[in-house]
Amino acid sequence: MHELSIAMALVGQAQEALAGRAVAHVDRITVRIGALSGVDPEALSFAFPVAAAGTPVAGAELRIERVDPEVRCQACGRTTQPKWPGTVCAACGSSETTLAEGREMSLVNIEYEEPAAAPEEPGHVR
Image (cartoon, rainbow, N blue to C red; front, side, top):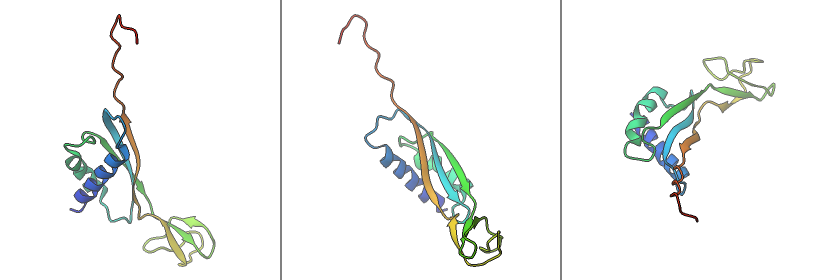
């Protein structure tokens, strides 16, 4: 299952993004996964808590946004969801297309809580 190594890389990327910030708890990590990326979203969801264990990301929810394939047509200039199988333009039927979306796997957002400020002691002026 290569999703475990992907989850480990995702946790590492999140830790790098949070480096130098005061973080009490990471609530949620959002990723975009293209339908043609080769990543199984369910397997990634299963592997994520294992990869996050013992890190500041442990306990965070993994939110996955799935991205359907889209092609950009050289013939008509439109961007459409292709007719499957293949990458035929849904607007004009041309096969002169390039894949615009659908292979990505990217970290989109990290939601976290900052530590609460220490309460001031009564009777002291700073």
